Length: 419
Image (cartoon, rainbow, N blue to C red; front, side):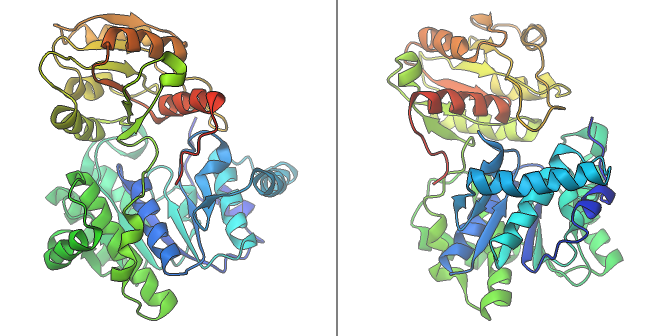
């Protein structure tokens, strides 16, 4: 069970000095990518930078990086053990995520970083990361419906929770491709607490947008990726102004050119697992908004005449399955439903039963072959490889399923998902 609030994280960190400054990023989709872009730019500008995102991909510590490298396992366990000891001795009753957040922040202090790029775990207002009191800049990415039981049933209600990371006299970069109602809620809250200015990352800086693409010399970014890059660029600019006295990021923006955020529109090979020669696509799309983005990508890049798409799907309990499947699954597509395994450090996360996913799909009709793989992720990959017969194959529905696939690959070869 998730219980939001700042009291427990405050107790865990009460004697910890946090001398580093932060870039704090909230939103429904795109947060992790924005954090990766920001830290890459700051690192290129010789700012000693840490990054904390969630969830982890394979190991609990891979969500914490120092200078673009995953923190060592030994340091993570050393700091985490001290946090857990305080939690136990003082009877704080902190959640796993609160312990992880405290561990990350203490590691940042231990490693003497200048700037920590921090992704909100859930919501914003009562998220453990919101213990940060005076960030350099806050960022609000694209907002959609997710975790409604905790954050509200409308995008406006959810936006209000995300806006809780805003701070007085601290600028906020906003993805202004968000709906008008979302922008209005955030602007209103900013005025109420004296935060700002609000910087619209896309529409207000159209000339700079053009210059970004000229600098990157790439034209294959998806629209949502472009919006994420705009947000990251503006946030990095503000951070650089504070840390380096006004250094412009134009000569640094190329640092994001080769950033590939694991589990988001990622192509990878599963030949060692299944013998399939062609790459597959893995994407952690887990809500309606991200499913629509993935659907657009698959439609324009993968679907072709005579080859239906084969899907391997999982979902966390509580997700609205039709919101995921309706944008993704087309007539005659093949589907194997599977359940991801235990998520280390996140015992509250449980998979939706594969039978439930297949039951929900019955309402769509006109589908191709379907299989209940239960908890057998490797079996799902092998079945999908056989059925796809070289055609498009996509793993989606949950980052935890992506993690399972990446872990299977790591068991076969030494892969490094972050680069």
